[in-house]
Image (cartoon, rainbow, N blue to C red; front, side, top):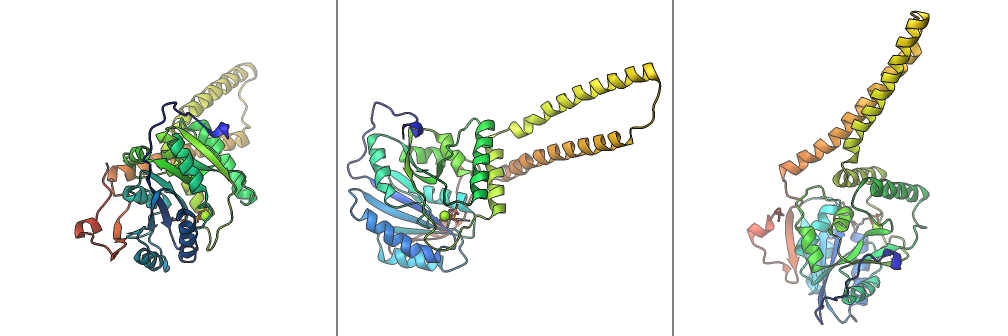
Length: 343
Ligand code: UDP
Ligand code: MG
């Protein structure tokens, strides 16, 4: 466990004796899961020696998730529901959750019980010991498919090689963060929010608590291959400029090679005279350089596309409605259409 521990300050910051812990849960088409989830979480936390609130984010579900969540909020004081105006994606939903959480520490977890509620107790214990970030470290990926394991491993290796920010390869989003870490993450203005990267960017004393990740309790995964691919691209482009810069080096290497080849041809022509054949090598070279140029233009495009999104400064999410324990809450019109500001 020590391997995952980064820095633990000697000076332990005092924690409130009866802190409020916010549990932030993004939900997208989880109608089958929310009932089981909320039963499990209340059972675990009912015996806790800290106060808690559960902030569900309905990320524009097209099934009965919102209704199910509101029903929960109506008979459970501690539940709040933030319903977004459409599906903004898990990263935006998490951002909305962090913005609305009021706790001294915030736990983010999935609605499908793949993040065991019992672990929250261990998280809070570590937080009380003085750690600012406590994350669930996946002890093994045995339950993932071979393809997913392989691609995840490749992604983390590549990401950590080209980015200054290092992602622990056993960490998901499941974690507890102290209020000041949440504050740091909320202060980040970017629109494309690769949360794993933002969490790692914030730093602070961090520790992992190992656990075996169970199967989904109900429903199915929302991350198709294509969505994961785009997610990985987002992560890399948001946290590294290496793909942009590598082309200058590729260019220099190719220029050197062509220079050497040109010298060779000149020498050979001087020594043995002109020779015409060479159709195959010319075609191969044209194809090769054509594709190198296309790839580099494509990489430029990835960054420009993101610059474009950032520059537009559109809000990260839109809140449709907020439900507190009073059912449909006392939100103002303004709040209802409130947008996330840059701060
Ligand atoms: N999720 C979300 N918005 C989305 C996709 C997913 O809020 O657009 C939520 C989903 O409801 C779940 C969590 O993100 O609570 C993780 O999703 P999932 O279990 O499908 O991912 P996996 O565990 O397969 O990586
Ligand atoms: Mg899941």
